[in-house]
Length: 73
Image (cartoon, rainbow, N blue to C red; front, top):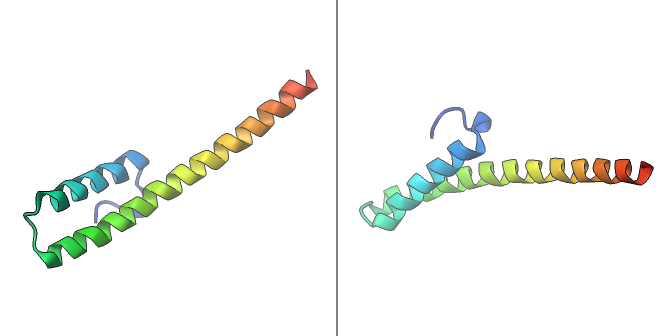
């Protein structure tokens, strides 16, 4: 895989996932290589999903804080 996967940005992980998807769609890889690519794709998908989940949680917290501020006015 690419650079330290745990420190990848969403954009980096998504780009890797797109590269893997393109390779798989091309049909120019062997079955064994396809399986390796698929496995790598799952890892990048998980990285993207975790980053999006964390971002969503932060947004929910900000929304709650904003609502509290609005109610205090």
